[in-house]
View 1 (cartoon, helix red, strand yellow):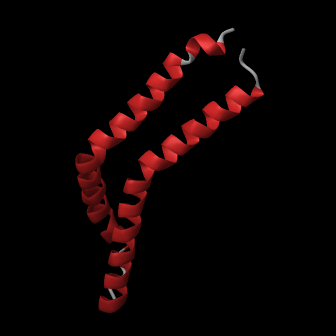
View 2 (cartoon, one colour; view 1 turned 60 degrees about the vertical axis):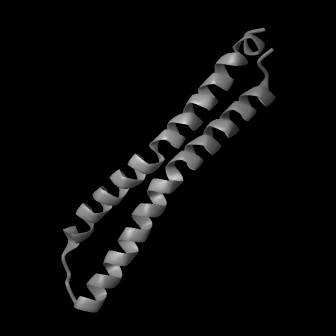
Length: 90
């Protein structure tokens, strides 16, 4: 039977999966942003759009490298959800 404990477990697992799968892109974006900010400070360049292209390229590279792992994590979570479906509807 679907009770509050099952719902809490599903939501906790979903949030953990979201954080785990989005962390690589966020960390790459953070590192590139920090590097560009340091570069801007050292060279006194005050261009606001300078971080856009390096971040897009970095995030694209992270997705290309880690996309298979991210997809595997999402598929595993979805399969776990569907396999427990009969338990949830009782």
